[in-house]
Length: 316
Image 1: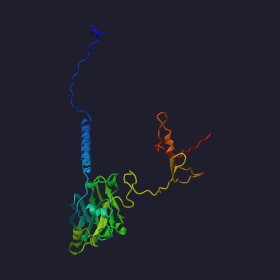
Image 2 (image 1 turned 90 degrees about the horizontal axis):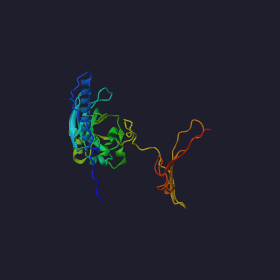
Image 3 (image 1 turned 30 degrees about the vertical axis):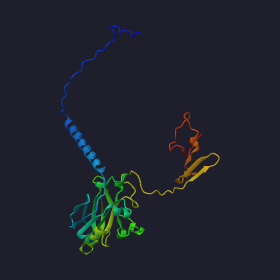
Image 4 (image 1 turned 60 degrees about the vertical axis):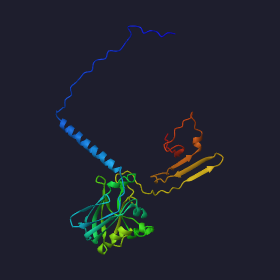
């Protein structure tokens, strides 16, 4: 069959109005300058935040380095050890004597840190005359080396001197958490520490550099988040330390049904009055077997095949 020819006088193209051209001028009325200033301030803050995030993604552990700093009362000595800014100054306002003379700070490599069971940075510090000092370590270069908001839980801990000589011994891995202050904005951790007395002619520092060991005068510190009591996030993001709950459960498999069942009971607080309701998490593989494309296959709130105790109170 031949195609029908278009009939004249059809609808055709609709009439479209011509676009209007409007001249736009900057508004300089009341509040315009203030609004522009706020927008520029927010843009600057966003740019700085994006730049900081890009830098944090390039995380890296420091290499071995050492430095000698003067301990002048009332002054803060600064240095950079393996891309890590470190500051130290004699303690003030304390009954304990402040460290004096020169302080020698050494940052060890990751090989030495792993031997002591430390996930973080291992360092030693000593002074000509033993005493207390304020030690601050910047962690911006390795803030994102570990996930789970690891940098928010960083603390300064002290280890025994034998941690560098015999790290395989359990008593040499004992961590003593120090009262630390973690500045999340500046990304540094600081604490008041006690520095041991240096051996003559800096023998302890030379031993750390040459053989990875330390003399009795050097104090061993670590910036880490794995010690006891360091699992709680200061921002309330959660507690990453080991849970006190015991992983005890009951399970059964086989039988005539061929199902696998598992249950875990939760410990509840005692009720103010009356009996205490039970609460448990259960799994049954047989509850999933009968589901097909024509059944309601919506899983529960705790997962496919899992159920919580379905308890309720009815009043009539």
